[in-house]
Length: 133
Ligand SMILES: [Zn+2]
Ligand SMILES: [Zn+2]
Image (tube, rainbow, N blue to C red; front, side, top):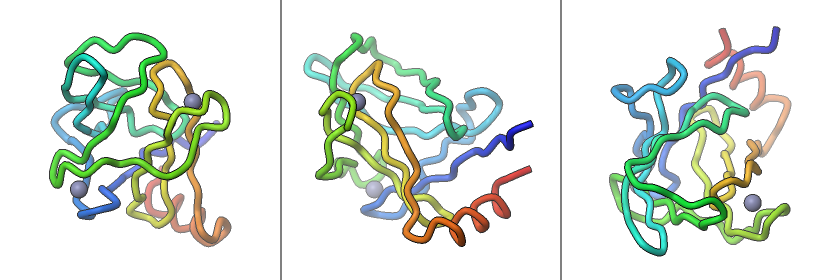
C-alpha cells in the first residue's frame, strides 16, 4: 500500500504554519487559508494529504473560478510567477516544513498540483522519515 503523507506547510512569507489542527479533513489537519474570489471572500480548508484534492470553504466557489489565496497570519498573497500548465491560471505555493514547496493551481476544479524539491532524493528521504507512517 502507498504511504499516506500528510504535508505540513508554512507561509512562504512569514513562515507561520498554515496547519489547522482543529479542522481536520480525512482525519488529518487541514491547510487553512484566506481566499478571495471575484464576488466574495472567505476561508478555505484544504486536505493536507499528498495527492488528495478535498477541501471545504465557508463560501460557495463556482467551478473554474480563479481563487486568490492569502496567508491568514500576514495576509500576503501566496502566488508564484508561474502559470498552471493545464489551464493557465496562476499557481499558488506553500513552503514544506521538510524543505521544498507545494504548488497548487488556483482555479477551482483544476487538479494540478505538485511538490517540488530543490534536491529530490535527499528531500524525499527527509520527507518520508518525518511524515511517513
Ligand atoms: Zn504569512
Ligand atoms: Zn490549472
